[in-house]
Image (cartoon, rainbow, N blue to C red; front, side):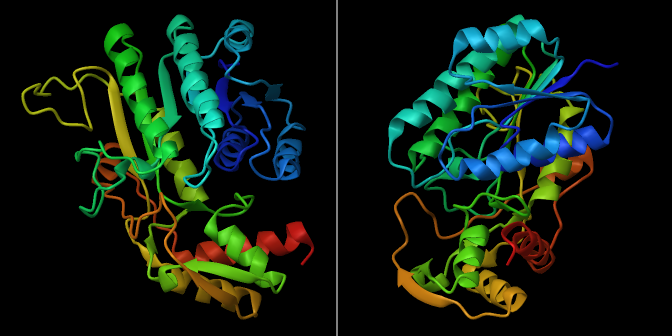
Length: 335
């Protein structure tokens, strides 16, 4: 049997779907999660319960901020590839300590374990939030990301810098993935698609920022998974043409690369609400609120590099994706 792939955050939204796809391909997966209570832990347990019956899935309940437990994990399993999706999410979360523990200390422990474990490729989750105060659209990996406007974004930017340093110092091939507003079945309850659907279905009000005049590059989870799995097989190499006098943020003289994975088709939040209303057959009770701190008015992914390097870019329409999500929502909640 080939060596297992490590997927961290395997009980999380994207990690669950990545693990499901790998298992369907016959790949042995070691899935790690610490089941933090940022949102309903029962949802994480339900995801994990769907993975554990597979005889090629090995569950591990580990906090990656524990350096000794992380080292032990790598000693017990001989990985060659790692998909690191575990993180403290949320641009509006205010307590800084979970971000520091998971996104900084946990990521450092992961880098150290990969360095000493002879890992051939570390793929890790970054975020579109790193573009921060940038208003040049579409967001390109070749543009600077020096002005994050949320602590979450700052930690993801830090992850990219930390990974680059390990690629430079130790030759560890690392690929950072900037996800754009991911949604779909088994999604996160704090994200707009799930949150709006749940409230409308139960007849509760929804808070709509800036009268719905906000645009997001909504990206269906299956497209995210396809991008991740293609890039896992595409370990970065040093760019021989990289110029230190005119440094390109997307590439490097070290084996490090960053990619956007987004739909390249921003949709207005008002349109999202209308699609959900149609799928549920119920009207929303809307309350307009100001744009929260840490949020931006519009996101859009430039996916030219992704399409060129792995021959793929997300394309699922918001109408199709929301329809699939609502079908799952009704089944999961018995609605």
